[in-house]
Structure formats: structure tokens, C-alpha cells
Image (cartoon, rainbow, N blue to C red; front, side, top):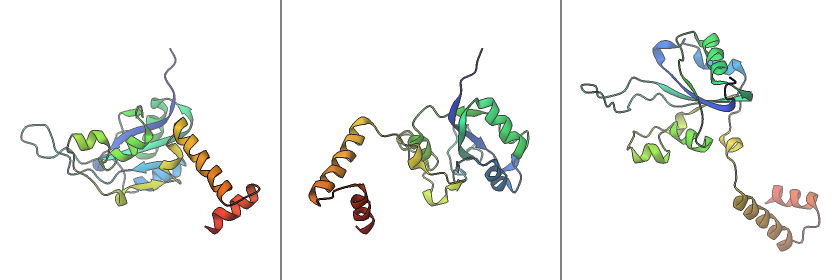
Length: 169
């Protein structure tokens, strides 16, 4: 039976299970990756334990649809066999997953999770969350209407004039 393929994945890395140059090794893979700040203040549900084991959340964007197993094996090849065990497909929106890196997602806020600084997110290989946020039809219509209004308001005759206007203003 064929396994499901996707482009967007997430997994955890534990500091004690990865090499010291792990970020450089991940960068050498050549795909866009976002890495959370070290989550070392997540409250534990285990009795007698205040915090969960320190970890990083990683968002991985494959170039083409691939399986979770292939991503896991690729990470293990560069970081070691014990570096990552579970790789999951991002089933929620990429925007929500990205917000979870700092616990700014609605789910994390509802669970009152410790908020980490978004300035501590590490972006590798030109990861840009805006590339992965999809706009719905209404958003696209609103944007088109804004551009058309701009063209009408400033009597712009063609795309070159519009481009110059946008660059200037």
C-alpha cells in the first residue's frame, strides 16, 4: 500500500541526541527549515516533574511530495540515527505550525503554554512563512480590488507604470 506523501513536515529534536553542528548539518540538506527556540520551559503533566524534556520544534519543507519515512531517514543520515524518531505531516495550516514554534498558535495560547520569543526562531535556506500561507478567494479578491483602485485613483495606464508607482511609494 502506498504511503501518503506531503511537502510540509514537523519533528522534534532533543539537544542530547544531536551533534554540536546540527544547524549547519540541517542547512546542508538544502531545503527550507524553521527551528523553534529551545523549548525548556514547557510544563510537564508528569507528577514530580516541573518541565518537559528540553527540545526544538522543526518545520521542514520538502522540494517535492515525499513520505514521512524518507524525511526521517534523511534527518537521521545527517544528524545520527537517534536524532529524530517521529516525523509528522503538517496537517494544520503552515501558519499555525509556524506560530506553534513560539507557542503563539491559538491551541498553545488556549493551553496557556509558555511563550518563546519569535526573534529566537532560526530560519535556514530562505525559509519564509509567507510562501506557505495560502490565501482564500475573498483575500485574493480584496487584493485585486485594492490594486484596481490604485490604478484608477492614479490613472496608471499599464503594468510598467504600476510597477514604477509601487516602487516609488
